[in-house]
Each structure stands twice: as structure tokens, then as C-alpha cells.
Length: 368
Image (cartoon, rainbow, N blue to C red; front, side):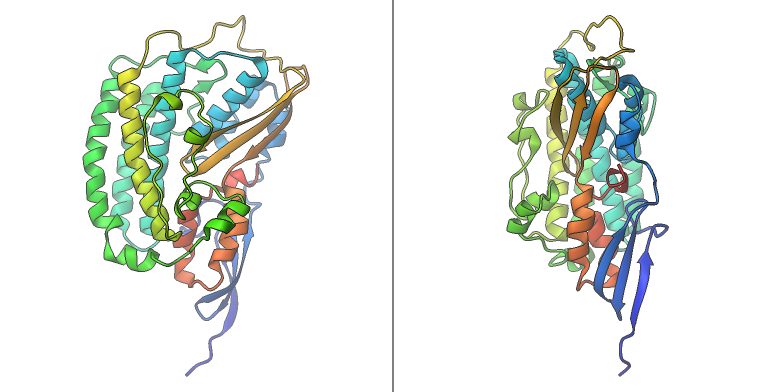
């Protein structure tokens, strides 16, 4: 029997199994990973410092780039931080529209996860389905905001424009379609024996460690911890909506997949309530000019629940039109370093993409 060789390889940044522009240096003994080291530095973004050198209105166009697959939580955090500092009261209709956008964004992000997670084990038909269904949501974003990916729509004081005529009806029709469609995803992906065999017992996270090390989102909920900012610290009009926080106990890749799949149902349920309750009224707070926001000498910390977990912004002003200090706290830093590097030790090379996709890592959040 041949003795396994000890080799070092780089998984990414060009590898299709990487969730963005990053790389993992893998020390292998045969096919088994002995050590994993995450490398970023391929983006050179520095979002926080870019924002600190611009006025509020100029910085608004930057934040959506912090996570390309899910820009809207960044817009919401940025707007909410400015509103906290300047004591703005956002009109009720604008709050409902923001939730509409955030839940559509959540669904779109989950479809993208489904495409990546299924592709990581060779179920490519699922990926094609998921990208096609995500495109239907992007069609709605294009109609509402003029853009498919970077929307720049959730703006300090409200939203940039009102809903087009018949828009809520089109959202409702799409939700009816997706509700039926997701049952097919259960058959060909979630309940697929190949996925279960690859995902059950792989990438297990302990609940105690998850809390101690600041993990969020499906990583927490997948090991039985019912944590969700929308319930724990409600913002916008989430306290007026009824929805559940799905959890699983196993803490593995499959548990996180079950949580995400259940969350898609909850987003459809939330969107149905938003459509039914949507009030009339203003969509933007009336201000003398939107070109100049003077932030007081104060600071604030705001957070939302993104499709991948708690997402927070720290913002401080100094009395000028510029942001004195900006800090972004997304899920990716702790998930890509503290967690991923640990979970990969002892795993097989073929499990790298599988485990990574289950954690919801977006590299620009790290190079912020």
C-alpha cells in the first residue's frame, strides 16, 4: 500500500468552489486536510476608509458593494445609522417597503446559496434552477430600483421611489409560484440521498463554541440557538409581523441547509403580510436637501438580520458632512477564519466547497 503524500495546495481564488475572491491554503495528507489557512487580499477594497473620506451622500453608493450577493442589508444599516444620528423618523410606508426589499433580498441570497451548495456536490441541475428562479426576483428589483444587483434604493430618510403600479400584485404572484416551486427543490436537493450522505455529520458546530466565538445566522440556528435580530431587537416594522425562527439541533452542513430552506418559507410568509398591510403615505422624509447630511458629534451601532446572520454597522460623526468613523461587522470574518479553518481540519478535500457554502462567507466583508 502506497504511503499518502503530504502536499500543500491553494483552493481559490479562481476555483469555482470558492465563495468569492479568497483562497484557502490546504495542507493535505493524501485527501485529508491537516491544516487550513484562509487568505484574503484579492479585492483591495477598504470600504470603511473609503466611506470615511466621503460625504454621507457619496458614501451611500459604496456600501452595497460590501456584499455583492446581498447588498440591501448594507443599505438598510447605513440608512438606519444616519437616521439614528440625525434623529430622522422614517415614514411608515417607507418602512414597509424596506422590509419588502429586505425579504426579497433574503430570498434571492438563499437561492444563490442553494445554487452554490448543490453545485459543491455535483447537483448542477439544482444550481441552474436556483439561478433562474433568483433571476425572477432580480426582475422585480430592476423594475423597482432600475438595477438588478446594486440597488442604492434604501436611502437615509426612506426609499428613493415609490412602488410601481401593480408591483405588489406581481410580488404576490411570484411568491405563489416560488411557494410551489420550493417543494420541487425539496425533492431534488434537500431530500436527495446524495446530499444527505455528503452533508450529515460534516462541518459540525458546537452550540457552546458558537456563542462564545460570535457566530451568527444559520450557524447558530443550525445547532439549536434561536437567535434572529428581527425578533431579538426588532427594527422597521418586524415587530408587527408574525413569523417563526427555524432551528435544528445537529449543527452540521445538513442542519444549516434545513434552516435556510425553512427560512425561505418564512420570507414568503412575511412578504404576504407586508403586501396585505402596506399603508399609503410618504416614502421619504421631507428635508431641505438630501445632498448635505451633517452628522452630530455622536456615534451609533445598528444591526439587521441578513440572509447569513446578524449584520451590524458602527458609525460616528464629528459635526461635518463626513463620517468620522465607520466599522462593519458582518458574518464573514469569524466564519471564514475562526470557524472555517477549524471545520476543515480532518475533512476531505472534496468537502471544502460543501462546508464553505454552508457558512455564508462573503469576502468583501472581510476586506472592508
